[in-house]
Image 1: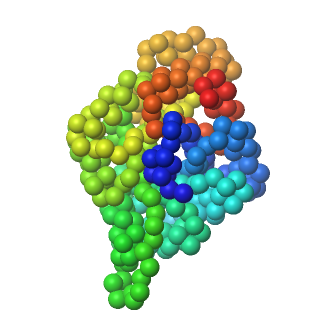
Image 2: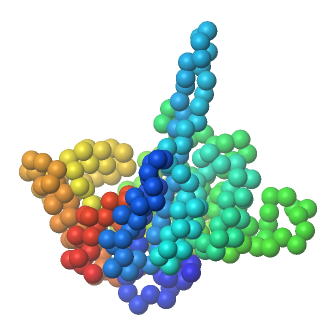
Image 3: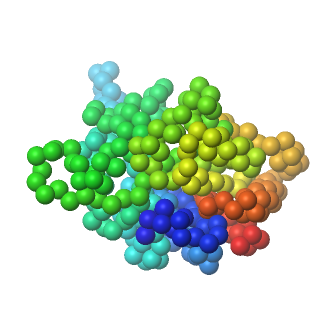
Length: 317
């Protein structure tokens, strides 16, 4: 079932969450351990994120360096198929521009269609850590908007090679990301929303926000999107802080603010357990307010660690 069908037929706010593929070397049980504790809350769909490869340089003697591409985590297609088969829950694989040519993208979309996976979240993806800015693959997409157009085209039977006869269309629901506190590369929120409108016009049927900790910023963002003619559902993304490293890492990495009341409480914490409890309490408060506002869905970034999210849901579901 498509995400947009879930959203359109829902009688209240849905629940979804997002997992990170395990590091290579870990078995499938590490995925089950992140999903099983949340099943009782009946998630409508599960996102599986995709992590960009890293680039390493190894010395080969005589002053020569060998460039090596290293993927620390497996891809999303097999994991999504496994989750759907085991749990009968719809899955949303993340598909990024980085590291993929247009032909690679087409192949991945065809695989998803063959497997009966109805959804995809289209993202540009981050730059490789060793590169100062995003650099697409040769014959790859530069922007998420372009990736969305390719998916929308394939849904109409438009393949890369037009001479292909009797080309069957795919039928994928496309989601896209949005940023209540603006994308870190955007000049300002107004231009960011203008680019977001282009993604929706290209074929994105719903949006999922980057994590945020100030609900008012989400409400204001949705209002501005509606004023600019963006009418698709906008799903709020939430992540509880669970340790002291998060206090500095998350605002810096994701370019967002922590509300003063939240940061004041975090400042009183002496250890990770106290931070985790403050993070859970804040997540409960956020979730209750969002549910009272009838948001389409609560989307939790669990990253495979479900304990804190479970503690929140026990209080709000």
